[in-house]
Length: 131
Image (tube, rainbow, N blue to C red):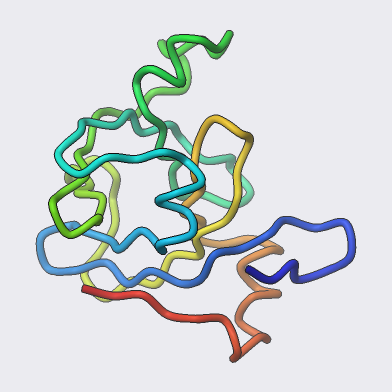
């Protein structure tokens, strides 16, 4: 898992959105965040700067102080193939590349744009995960 710039976020790789709104979760991220196949997850709005979403386990968020009424975008699900299934309101398009980054300790980030995304584009060695 590379850190793109000194002091910057760590990234797990790129994930390509599939035809049904699904995106692979890199194995290291799946393990680090404790996801389980078949479980529902909460989607949190990403920042205005980087867009995208944070994907978090319900029980992890239940122990946090995050006001879900302001941040929650909706619910998704982890499928048997360790992919997150995003609902249409997440706004992702088939074929879109999302940068999977270590977020807070609460949510795994799927980043759409911004400085970290632009830096990642300059790193061809970052692994790409797709269905």
